[in-house]
Image 1 (cartoon, helix red, strand yellow):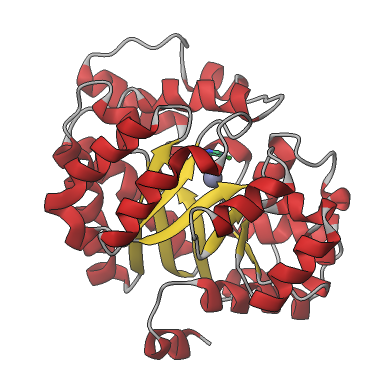
Image 2 (cartoon, protein in one colour):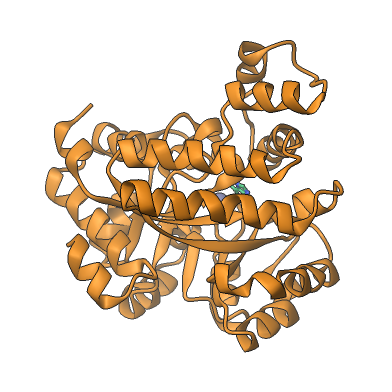
Length: 324
Ligand code: ES4
Ligand code: ZN
């Protein structure tokens, strides 16, 4: 592990908290909640982490998170992620959670958000990690379900900074969530969306024009569209790129084919993130390492990526100045 990467102060902007559930915690929570899993043990579960595409991952991701039942479960999961983040010198993190994946199973919205929030507060106190929480809509579900989720979130608005859009991208374009995003915007939420992971560059254009997002999650499909790349560079629209995720979900064939350097050199505000670190082979330092090894990125390029993370974050100008 490179000492430069380890000591670099990092910001994480694309992390699904349910994707930080390690097999050991999945089994511990299953035991605690009396749930029987389809896998015999931790090793058998980990052996299933071989993905062909986004959907094959999502199937295991939803199965893994089914052990989450109580507020304490959500606290324990979030606390474990934050401990790792702290150990990797992550100073600030903006975290997605998927409320519909839990409320659909009968878990109350309040248990989900309260458990996560309590861990975030404790990490700020114990370790000085700042954070924001982003409510993410599942795009394979109808827009009405997203709007109902916004309604459930109302009592917790003070704990929620933004809304996002994740899950199966192909066939679920940004346009499907126009009304939900307009409502979220009226309610004062900041807006992001996954776009251009498996979907086409047009989904990136549509997330910006129709949903009015201020960051794009993934966005690597921009590499196929030079005019879009120029627009993203000009506007400094941030892309929260996830290198190991792109490799594991076969968005790229090898790390040496990853578009990160091309996007960086074209002047885009690209950032490094871990997405679902328990499933994709590593947390923040591993993602920086993958770029260093696969693309021979220099320390100065890695530093620029980390600075882009600060720029793209929702920290105040004063808080940003403290990190740079
Ligand atoms: C996700 Cl990698 C990815 N893409 C879309 N939705 C997601 N939810 C969790 N990880
Ligand atoms: Zn994601």
